[in-house]
Length: 420
Ligand code: PMP
Image (tube, rainbow, N blue to C red; front, side, top):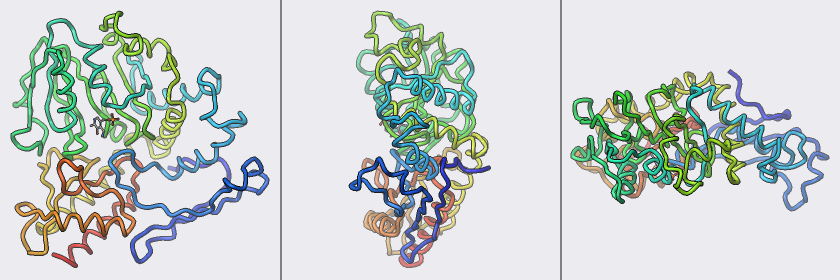
């Protein structure tokens, strides 16, 4: 499968790791000088950049070919004479960009026609409020599967006057796994079940979605959307900020079964009703145009990797390499997450000290700090865990290249050799 190609001929060479492990990627554009005539000298193009291996948890790495395409089209989007950033959202050009992003998502996520695809603002966090506002039925509670920080945030909003139940929680095991089937007690008359498919901070992920019979599932897929094939029909509503697997921050994807969006009271503020955005095809007000454009490019990139099946394979390979490195370190590294619940997107682990003790029983914060520092110095950026839990967290979203994980695991073995 070929990479998403920038439109003009150019080549970029990965020159390989320097002594510190920093990958230098040099671009040699073959653009002619005249092509830059409309660029003032103060904005002259840089012809070489250093790109690090980026393991940030979101916003996070974007594919190089997508960034190149953005650069290519930045000043003059496909003969329009302007940047996507400068376009009217009511123009036919932007309408085609909006439609292409939706079509790409519909194709790759296999979204059925009875589901709407809308592009909103406010991040996943806003959906903790909009979902109950639109989908709650009188007297019918929301059932929440509590698996960590992000379901806690959803719970905080539900506590502000919305009937709800905690249908399962893995808090007693410190969120080191998602709930087992027999631990989930659902109410048959719930308005919906809220769950988070991938817990970004705790490093857990559902590898099978719980059965909820007729009760719709509202899924927070912020950190694993489009990372693997999944059956949209199992869900009533799916939401995700684009900034991990699908583009930059600023746009939130909502996929909602159209009949569920009709549950909302028509007296809700217009902008807070899903039906408004469905009816207006995300153009009720000015949408985050540039971010939507990049989502469209990301769907082309997904295509070039064999769709979600190809992406899943790539993600599984990356995660296996990292988990194998952790598991074969004789306790120098330790992943606290139960194997069945391990996330392919966010790999969390602890690091042992220089005293020979195991990371499972005696994780060493000083060692972890040093790991993060040395990794960053070697061009492996974004490895420290979330500030609320500590340890390390490596995010392996779609755009993270297998070569990045190879460089990281090689660094990990070195780090252990020097200290273990
Ligand atoms: N849910 C999950 C699982 C997340 O990882 C995040 C962001 N890290 C959010 C919700 C919140 O998303 P946002 O910052 O876009 O509001």
